[in-house]
Image (cartoon, rainbow over all chains, first blue to last red; front, side):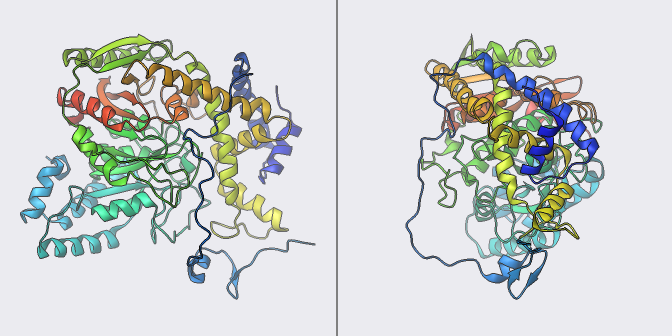
Length: 95
Length: 485
């Protein structure tokens, strides 16, 4: 499977990345090379092979639903680029 | 002889006998950094004021009396993808060039409790994506054995700092080889523990099913002590394993009689530098002379490991790096048109090319229509690769081979071709996919550049890995060799 410039633009949009025309061309070539290499995997018959998402046999690691202290506000806001009244400010979400 | 060439017990005795102070150790570290880091560039941030304050407090505590552990007072470097409260943590990315963490990673907390002193944060490939440290958005780190060469990556700073004698030990992280390969390139010891053994809490996530923190040290004994300090269940990491932690230092017996070693033919075939192969064959002869036995084996799915890894790791990374949106922390872009533009501009300005490349690859592999062919397929191949190891470990205690197919390469040599860079990880990646432990130890040189031997063990059997590594070290002197700086 090889990807096109349109695919690069679609994926960039999904990933919230803005690419220059030069970057798009460069990624197109590099990604195609990598994906071509990855097509190797289709040599293997994996019909009856279960996927491994995680090497340790653990599921649903949870804690008790107990109230604990939350982060103090000053720590939450320590690295905020723009804050007002104890809130983090961002551009409008809705038009 | 540098202070840091002294073994742990000797430093311990001198500290308690008042012949040496923590302040002297820390000052020796800063002096060595000042002397060598303009050419090595292992560090991004130094922790001078706080390290000195901590050292003074620790010397006062020593004066009050009492016995401390063997890591007490040792200057340590921390890879810059582990958060350190109040100390700039950048992941070598422009995106986090202003990030001041509000907490410590668990591994960092544990080292503090053991008395180690953080002297600074170490350079790395951006967000741990890379195998040469050339993807740092700050500057490349150089190999102390030859500064025209890469130290390896992504824990390049961690390896270089230990090899250059700037710190007593460092912490690195390993996703596809990022502790082991730089350890090999820099002629030191690097250990990737079993997945789940060391808490990932506070390690900025790259690939959550693969990332592990581990020690980089000048010898196996130090690695055992650092591992002892950082291993263990952590409730704040939901992937942390609830296993009993053995006494790793008790494994350093020097005895490998009867040890059964498997050597995969896939790790010594085409593409492996003949000088690397020769060093590994010599190492096998050393093991034979110590009473261990080895045989050639096959891990038949090895050739598919890199493709599977890059699909899985990039997919996980594309998800993990979605949090870098410019909203709550990091460098936010100016004058965005709207919220989505804020995300786009902040990320595009903040991330380097390799990071963008992997996010793109991962997003594609996970996207509708391609998920089955790429991500799911890679997960199934992962099962087959793990299966190769499970099969081998029915008959063998350990698996041995080179850590990397070649010694270090020149800075700039592979930057233009990402795929070639990825192929350097052929020996380390399968181990990561299987989640099992492995150590790299120095076993020779190729025209002045170090060669590493990789010793791979069963899940949670770090003791056997350390025992074998230690026995080799006890009968050779590669670990005593230092680069001329």
